[in-house]
Length: 393
Image 1 (cartoon, one colour):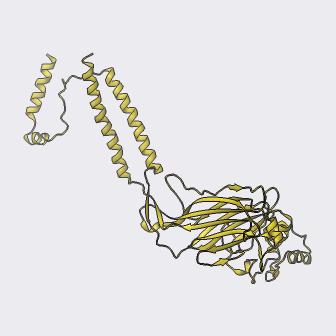
Image 2: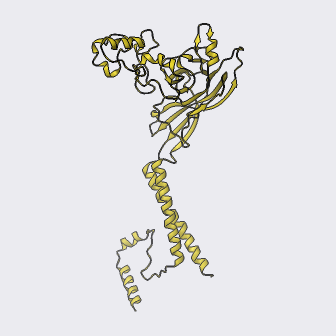
Image 3: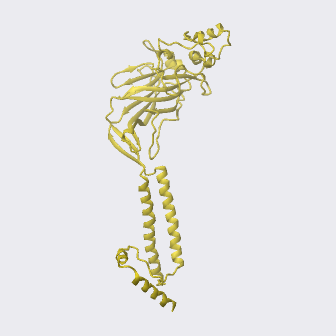
């Protein structure tokens, strides 16, 4: 009786609806079942529902994680390199544990025939003791953080216009009346302290004493930024040249063992990124020759690389990545060869463009809705299939 009364009330209610509302209701895409519509819950449906909730939770978590950390935001394209006139920065940090600084030099050669011997601009040579520690712990004049250049020639010890400080930084202020005085040698600095009645500083704190430190320490560290033209060429670490060639003693004592603490190419300020990570293959590479008269050659294939982060195409950052191969051999002394470490390099004509473009937040919401809705539909069909199969068992 109660069911009949309920149905009669529904019929009366439907008949009392306004005609306009009936027309609007005709386009209802979500028809509602009558109240007497019977529904049943089964353990099979509960199992499918549990699976649905777990799968939706996992997929939503994965999408949120991917959106926050940009898993799908990386893309890579290739284009022809058109920046042939640019100069390139080589950022070096190489240690020779068994060659004093005054016996090694850096020469730069390129395919155009340009040869620069004993390059020192923006390259800082630091004596290294037998334990591999820097023998010089002071500050260099006109140099800030790693890679910063000496902007003025008066700050460069290798320049004819060099004017060295007479006092280390902690005494420089109190001796401001001597600020125009130049002390270009280690003895000049020590004599300046004697004249002022100050205790002499340690030689490992005075830049002008680096040569003296080199005479008593077995190793040398090269660190700095070398700027070369964008042509193929070589960087050669070899016995220091003298007018007419090499000293036989220097060639016989030169040990090519080395540690490449760091070698990168391009602007260090550029933020580099890639789906698989950015690699510097030679960082931390060590080579111990075990014997003298060894020539070690590295060949670097340098690839111009651009990075674009965000939607602004004007925010391209250009730098370089490289791959490397290397070999070594014993040097036949007397046949035009000499022990050395050379870094040959050539530039690839293609350019790699790396993009990081995160999808918009509305697009992210659409993806989440698609995941949730799609899973409900698919697992609803599976639930219906489970119920249908269950009728036969």
